[in-house]
Length: 150
Image (cartoon, rainbow, N blue to C red; front, side, top):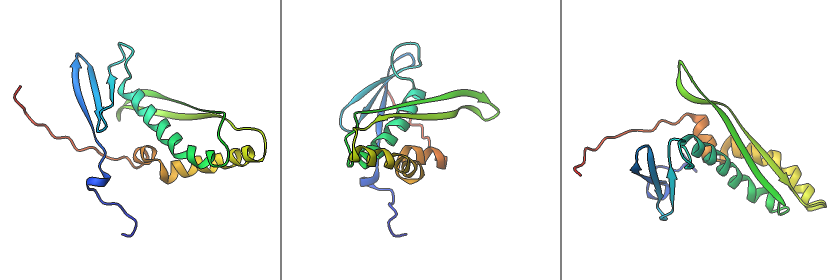
């Protein structure tokens, strides 16, 4: 299909996760940046918080260049929340919501950016933001176990 990317080296995204203690892990990206992850008993981000961060960041990073071409925002904050529940489907998030607090400068450029924001957010949700699209499509992760010797 024209314009469709197929899995391969240039499309791959990856992170490594290493156990650093009981319910504590260190994520490392291919550029060497690390992030500490825990179960919520300390200050580290939890996996659910990281999912919310990924959703907010992907949407913001997608929308920001579209609107900031018109006017540089004075404020651009994203607040993301969800309820974690357990039901017949197991543990999952419901009522996921993002709130964008934005302020653009006064004047014609600021008005153009402000007017474009709803459409840019809709485009991000419908097709541009990889994280929101993956959540919406319900992707499945394959799991493999390798028994390694210490």
